[in-house]
Amino acid sequence: MESFFRTHKYLVEHLGPSIERTLMRQINWNHRLIGIKGTRGVGKTNFILQYARNEFDVNKRDCLYINLNHFYFTVRSIFSFAKEFAENGGKTLLLDQIHKYPNWSKELKQCYNELPELKIIFTGSTVIDLSGDIEISDSVQVYNLRGFSYREFLNILLEKNFRTYSLSEIIENHGQIAEEISSKINPIKRFWDYLHHGYYPFFLEKRNFSENLLKTVNMMLEIDVLSIKQIEHSYLAKLRKLLYMLAIASPGKPNISQLSIDCEISRATVTNYLEYLKGARLINMLYKDGESYPKKPDLVYMHNTNLMFPLKMSTIDYQSLSETFFYNQLHHSDYKVMRGAKKGFFIIEKDGEKFSFRVEGNPTRRKQTKNGSNTLLAVNGLVVSQDQKNVIPLWLLGFLY
Image (cartoon, rainbow, N blue to C red):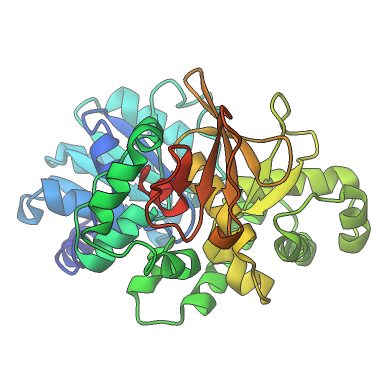
């Protein structure tokens, strides 16, 4: 255990500057069993290490970070380790990559039941289903760590402290909010940077962003999909081909029969793989109101705009980028996103409220909405809307979280 304390101390003391994530303020840290799910590469490890640095003195040894990918845990159980830690004064155990450990949910439940003075915070892949796990579903509080919003990207890059706004606030007061923000920065100047490389923390590293992202995507397919879903490794090439075909056509309506032929897998397997890719946060599937999986989606989008560049490897039009950004930011803000009457139109629903949006990627092609129309227009390239109350700058939706 002494070796783990040394590693914990080193990691905390050599952690980079604090990156304020919205989720840090949303978690009920008093709960005894907390799960943090997130896409590979969004910064789950740094997130829990920042929590350790903010809340604990490394010299008191009452908080300990361990990575369950360590070979030590091939012969040592989580429960026996946690028990020893608690008996020696440990209060908070941070378990990274929980999905790397077999029967993890059963042992976490044992810890929860038999070690009442110990708090456990663990991270895991988005693919694991905690809500359906009978072992711990009634004991764990689960949170999702998402990629950076445009607001978080600006706060990090420009050392600002912009706050979040609800969708209702933006709809009602977008002119005033946009003017206030644009008086401090040029929100359009950095928006393209965000669409290209702002969702993942890789832009903070001195490495090639696209190559790093492609490497991460391949790891998502091999580990977060094949391994966790227990798919034979021989199917990896077919899964990679499916993702590539979806990427070059996105946003597009998937032809399940043609994808089945091209990837040499059954139609049912294509449908299952679509759901797995969605669970891995590689794609988003858009349905009409009232429809959902396992029905065929109306449109498939890349999960975020950053994925479009290395995967499509071609000119990406502003409309596709704008729609993908819109879907991603609204979906991450816990809104249900559905397809509207035609392409570019979306229906947004949350807590009984429904909004109709049209996304316009080219401000020079912007059309006036009809008088009395309830449709809101989200326009890319617009700094502040001064002519119509229902015309909203697209970038401002990046301040929802």
